[in-house]
Image 1 (cartoon, helix red, strand yellow):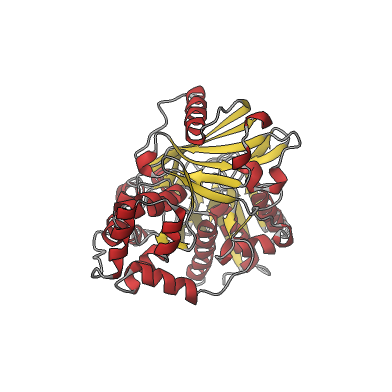
Image 2 (cartoon, rainbow, N blue to C red; image 1 turned 90 degrees about the vertical axis):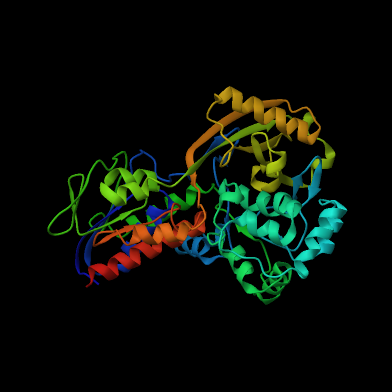
Length: 456
């Protein structure tokens, strides 16, 4: 462990904040200063919470998985562990001509029970028969590293479209035909575990430690509270150990004889925790080209408040629904936020809906904000068979929100890692995992590996 020096973390999203917090924690008792540099005035990156009506409503992710340790551990470390809220028992569905319940016993969309799928009514009889062939078909090749190709080879078109792509595609803003199987560890594990994916998924569920209680959690003031609490915990170590500079984009990054120059800040080590397309601007040659070569997808969330009189009784026990790719126009998912979260229930009985639009190969930027609201309302009204009269609407656009992990993404990331100069780390959702726990894990990894390299 170095005893003195300065480390600059570029990017104040969840990855950068987690990396900076880990650096400050690990270097306690030293004279190492950690500087967190953020281009915008606010921290949080793609995590944002703001007031909508009478409530604080997230403008992006509204929860994180509890079964993976990274986010829940960070929340506990910064004093939020006992405050985490869990969703209600309202159930989610899939819209395929009408609203169907999501079948029970799925592993990232892969069935563990054909009976449960049949009971849901989501698949026609012929599709169930095709899915059953997974039990007797030889193991599928994964050389193509495509989720779509693998899922269809095991279960056929309908399981891929209405389950695997609907669930995975909504998480990653992706077209799973062009998304890496290796990049989704649970699916990749199933593809390697045995001949039958269904049997492998069933064994995986049985062997997993039983987890009673909720699957998701969120801070009471929205996901941005995790950012603020983590920064506050970091700054408790003192300004000489932890410094946050917001509203200051990284304009230049130069390697020096002793380390790095970030803008006008001397640094012994650097973590770049921005999206790859931003990081690419800091480098010439092969590294800059490689970082700029990742495809991305644009998404938007239209948040609307629906008057109580427009909301039917039969939707009262629902938390929202996903829309399979074959059924999509622009809307990909709808969350009934007021029924998903107790703290978002409105006193006047109105409903807050968060309507997601766009994904890979489903562009939305040709529409202005009014056009997005109109599409969101029109499609959702048609799918639910009701007239949605909204009292309030908010549009949040996330340009280049999701890096698309094309087949063989891991090999591309490994090649980039091989080009990195000494005492520099890349971290974030462009590389080793999308989602809040994955970003926290990658920021933590980058901090630990940077300190290890600086000690040598």
